[in-house]
Image 1 (tube, rainbow, N blue to C red):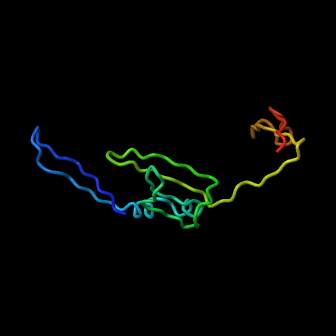
Image 2 (cartoon, helix red, strand yellow):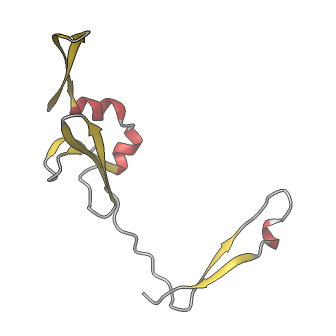
Length: 126
């Protein structure tokens, strides 16, 4: 889908014309989104009501698990950049008595075997 951008041109207070720029949203996605990101995410330009203007989904359609949407501040248009991961949800399960240990290691002063937890938090039962 092409998108047009109009800029009025003035010489002092006198209107002298318009500068018109047309660009392809799908070309922007193809040329500016790295291939490795497109393999893991469906990337799309959408409207406020999620109508898709252009989409790139090299790795397949998104699974609606990990989604991020950001409004682009374009004059005269409400356009969102949406990413939708092709990854499934995390299926990690833990025993209810498991504890999460946060460890800090300074490689030059503490050997990894001597690291001690700085926090030990009980996890809530799933």
